[in-house]
Image (spheres, rainbow, N blue to C red):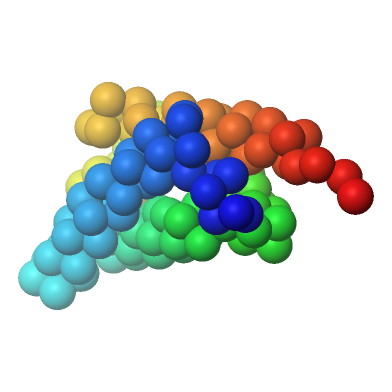
Length: 135
C-alpha cells in the first residue's frame, strides 16, 4: 500500500517524468563522459550527477513507503539546490561551461523541466506525507 500512495495520480506523472529525465541524463552523460570528457569535464560530471539524482528519485518514488518518501524529498531538495546553483553559475560565468549540462540555465535545454520537477516533487511528497493516516 505504501508504494501505491506515491505513484497514484500526480505521483504517477512524477515517476514518468523522472524516468524520462533519468534515461535522457544517463544517456547524455554516459556518451559525453565516454567520448568527450576532455572538452568539458565540469559540465559532463555535473550531468552525470544529475543522472544519478534522477535515477535515485525515480527508484524511491516507485519503491514507496515512508523511508523512500523522505529520501526522495531530501533528493528533490538537493536537486533543486543543484539546479539553482548550476543554473546561476552557467548564467554568470558561461565560459566555465564550454558545453551545457542538464541543469544549465535552469534547464533551458530541457524546457525548464529540471527546475520545475523538483519543486513539483517536493510539493507532491509533502502532500503524500499529510495523506498518511496516523495510527
